[in-house]
Length: 165
Image (cartoon, rainbow, N blue to C red; front, top):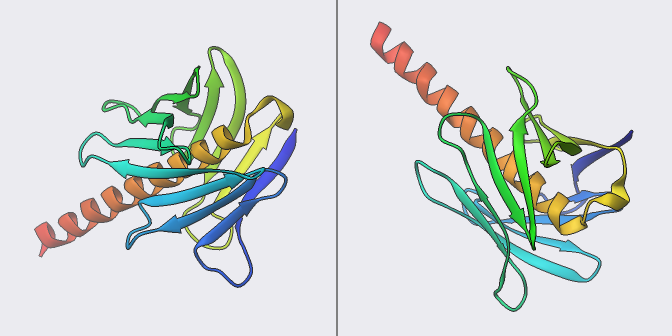
């Protein structure tokens, strides 16, 4: 099992790297967009939708390289990258941990820790079996899912406090 981390790069609070894979540079006021780079290839990732979140990755020519649609009833959802069909599934009941899978085969476990210097831990059996763009896209998706869950929990806690006042 290979253990990786998405870590903030020195000197730039908005750029994060996964050693041996590539980088994610967060963009926008709420970091709902990013540029992913790996092996001289880049993708622009953007999040859209309020209630049913969709994320798209486009290549330098503007072609859709990847898409994720959040499931409404359970955490995760289908993820497409290139011609491949994948899924992000909850890998833990209580935490922001997701399994990136292709059919029944788990490719990676991504564990969202919240923001900071090391927001996501990644475990893979075979790093060569996962396209770098796919892993970067899945990492950004997990970051968004974790952030959305934190915002929902914060809102629910605020509502509970206000109701008790």
